[in-house]
Image 1 (cartoon, rainbow, N blue to C red):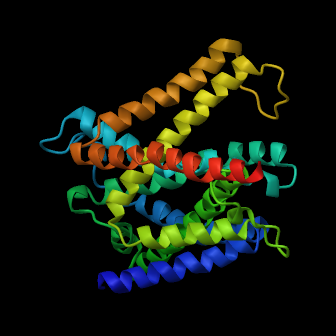
Image 2 (tube, rainbow, N blue to C red):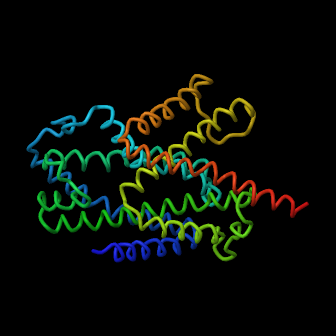
Length: 320
């Protein structure tokens, strides 16, 4: 399809889920459960059928020709981080979740292993059945599924991939639309963004603003968007871990629903380990990936300065 048609479909998906998010976290959560059930079933069938058709060692060759271990591992870790990213964003919608301190913790214990299996097993089976990974392109899972179980399974997996991306976008929108809402409350963005829907209790202006931003970026190349997304996510996660360490030191008696065990050793292991892995993934990736990610991250400080200089100060002066 043409780029314009592709963008039009993306816009339809973006604004459908934007309206869904305006309706509230309960509807997003219910729809996500239904999406997960639909998209998981064909991959279970694919794994069961594929296990009887194994013809290749998935770890041979270990490295692509002409690539070194550090660059391959760096790119792999970046993609792995993208696969499991999003857990840190649940907290932004905690205010709209009943009994959030208990619900979120119990959900993560169940969901995190499920996410690892849902990505790992289909990839492993696919490599065992189709070793020509150099020729894999977007949508190749559906071709492998068709080889394993026929055209019906291939179509089912293809549709599941579409549904999976829709569900992923819906969850991301739920999480990240609350950030401009919070920034506006703190005075770093215009006060109008704090508007809450009187009917649904959701930050409607922030959600619509997020939908507009996503609509613009949907025109871009997928691979470049993923790299930029990962770099920005990682830098945000780094700040969250540093904030954890600082608050533990400066506010040790602050009431906490979640607390890292192990004292200072446990705290620093929790902070240093993910930061070290993230930095390795960022710096060991391909040169063009590093450049694209660094440029995206570099826009953050100037944007923050502009918001503080021309929005927050204006608000403070106006209040005075």
